[in-house]
Length: 154
Image (cartoon, rainbow, N blue to C red; front, side):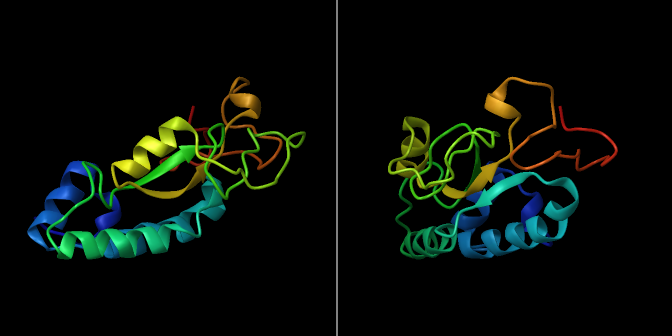
């Protein structure tokens, strides 16, 4: 498997590369965060990045090196829509009317992802309260389609 750009690999390909020791979760995270840094200013996909992702990818890399992955998603980077709580990150729900304070606990979905070993990259933008027209968010602005920035992703 060619691993020229780990940011383009799906979960199955990432897990196979980790098992084959041709890629580490830390290398995957670095590739993906570099791509986010390049593209997010244009497409505005992320509401907030998770500063704990680096620590989690390092821990996953150590588990894979010991042939002891934590779960079915160990080291797989995932994003959480900004309508779900992630401990230590704000949940704005796409609105300026909600608190920007960090949440104290994970939502059940996030807890399940963490138990499976997933690395939470950050939270992606959402329309206000997850229900209005695609792409427009009072809290973070318009999200653009990465394949055609003239369009919304919805």
